[in-house]
Figure 1 (cartoon, helix red, strand yellow):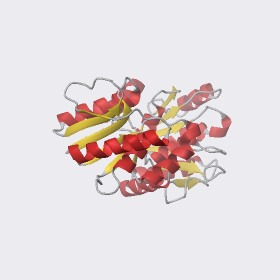
Figure 2 (cartoon, rainbow, N blue to C red; figure 1 turned 90 degrees about the vertical axis):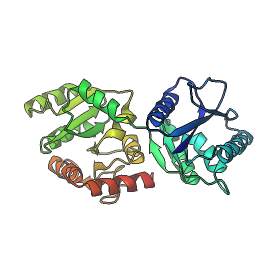
Figure 3 (cartoon, rainbow, N blue to C red; figure 1 turned 30 degrees about the vertical axis):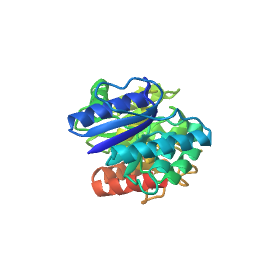
Figure 4 (cartoon, rainbow, N blue to C red; figure 1 turned 60 degrees about the vertical axis):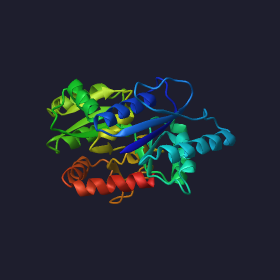
Length: 304
């Protein structure tokens, strides 16, 4: 397969490192690849560089970059065009319309929370399938080892400040009724010690981890089998938005801020607030029905 990656620049940031890793994996798999990007960065050995103008917010630059990319698509003839981040998704969508159509997708590596809504609208306009940047299996396995979790346990992730509103105590109680699953809670706050006592009292120290704030939170959410949000109330829950954009099935409480976002049985499962057993049943239902998990995740990603 011939794969063309499209990224703003090829510097030393996280998105750029992911592109380099993808190229290495594609080379190992026997694929051909090239990277279209702006700037003067030297590509890794053996990586063809297809130059683009440096992108900024001016429409003229977006059009110039898309016109240049259109030529590269015509000349290099890729089987798929893989854009990285929203700006290059727009360039790719413009370049591959009319006459040079190629299958395309876009990976989101990092979007500021303030830009989530605008980004969602922009990506819907491009028509490109969206893939959140997740953790590769090796990275997930390394995190499991770091946390001391057995490799065979299914991964349930909850994220948010450790405060009463988020009801992480319900998540801990629920996981006690879901054998074969581990719960990882991302975030810190004043209830940490109370949660640690609860975990010890329920003898769940082998299956529940409080890992604090984590730089790879988006990737960890993307690697979850289920994302759990048992809050008493929410505003616009960015954790749920990120989980849905990563096509992860969500189990949440039927409260303000969540019931407007998650449609029960369509792109997630909702349970009454304060119902630990209901949370456990919903999580177990998803873990034991792969078709349901895929359907919920796909519908969630399509909605976001």
